Image 1: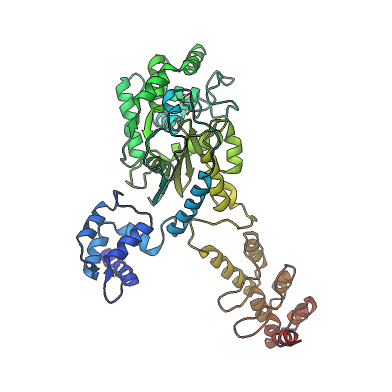
Image 2 (image 1 turned 45 degrees about the vertical axis):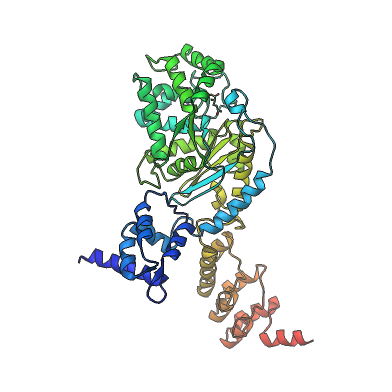
Length: 520
Ligand code: GLN
């Protein structure tokens, strides 16, 4: 047996021992643990594992556990060690359910009516789905209903254009928000569409993809890429939507002719075919669940979390997310970047696709739109999400009060680490580090498991400067540890006269003084 294999065996044994009682693990417990972690049965990475699990005995021995783990070694290890990107997935899901429930109360807005097929959709439909970069999934509401992606097709169209032409794409389309509605009859100063996230820019990208190829090949190509980004889930096409988009497309035709008049297109572009391809892209259908997987592929730098396939190149994904951040939410893009701070794209079918880079993708679908064309509940849900979790890109700025939850850390794991680090810095008198940790939101009065605070240890070690630094903050002056000592007791016991003076001057007490005061 090689050394590497030996190591693997050892770690599998460790995993087994972490869960076993009386020499075995219950099959049900493994099933439960997989489900809790958000790794679902239809996940291609665990299909065989689930199948093998079904064939196992009720009680799983060490030997059968070894065989089971072999079906998905890395994943099982991540699940059992709690190292998936959202370690406490059940708590995260329960928060999502609350946001979902609260957002469902919103009945404002109205469905898009520019084509009958959209006007007929049930306005009360509502779905939220999430897929993390480790493939943890949850879906709420009507997450298995198909709807057309509409403008949510634009990021993919842009990615495919980049894939073929690289930065050349931007010889044909700008990167600046237009400040106008998505179908405004306007081009930038160079006579080019402002960006790929509005109609003119998306029509341009449609012209750039597989130039000169048969329209059927072009469509197959884009459909295939959608499927790959969605881990092979079904991607549909709504022919009725396509036909009526085509019927009622004066504005998009106008945009096309306007660009042609300005010589914006590359040579030999067939305008009619390009527009038809654009309408087809808008009429592609996904579910909230599958679109969340597409969003997670973008969040994961272009690699689909469920299949491990590199669908898009990371540098192009970066370009795409940048433009989604500045131009993805129509005329609300600036406000959305300010308030929510995440790359997103919305479509008139009421869909919002949100990307939290290196964490997860989300899809919210609810057909009622606000006056700017964004899903009312979609925007509302995003607000709730970032009000509770530190997902806004700039939530990481130093000095912010950490009142939000970090879904990527297990419960208070991070706070605990900072607290211990703070107490440790006080013990060695490292004031710059103490400042930094306070700026991150560490409470300077927090005690450790033994009730020892930073003031206790600084007093015990005679670190006068650290004591002085702490006394300038609004802290508890006489906390009592598990051995009934206050910081003043510690300073006396260790004969640090300068520290004693500082503490007395600030009004700190010994434990016996506190007790006397309590009696009075
Ligand atoms: N099919 C719509 C159009 O081109 C898509 C626009 C959208 O979702 N904003 O007008």
